[in-house]
Length: 173
Image (tube, rainbow, N blue to C red; front, side, top):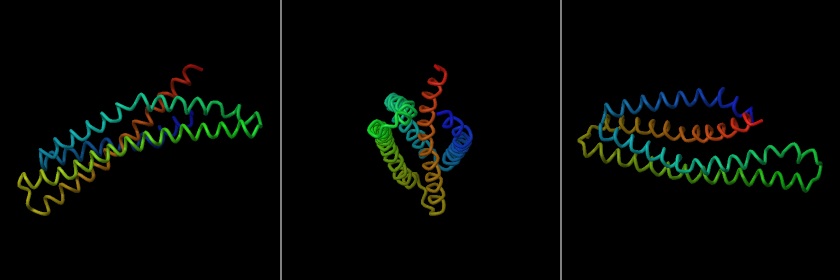
């Protein structure tokens, strides 16, 4: 579990910083191109944040159960009983599947929000009078960049929730 904390600090934290800087930069650019699309990007970001915050207790609960089972791993292996090891591995799989299911639901909702934002940004841009193809193309490319940066942030949030639970375990030892 400590390895996950080190991995987050070495690999995920620099990616998180790059994503946040990229997100802020692209939102500033979108604001300079079209104020209404900028407002839409803020609304989409808040909606996605709400989805993940609303399921954070469930995520923490599933991570706790998964980590509880991981702590039993040494005992399961040292017993040298196939049935006991089989049950342990199935339990680990069960928690992985539940975490993956929750992540899939959250990501699907976030993706629907982002696709809706993309469609609305095109409609809003045309309604606001952006009829030059180059300007519309530039705005849409920045919207795609925004979508890429915003889609990465929930993964970091979920990692942070997992690491918070692991940190509490380590402090209680």
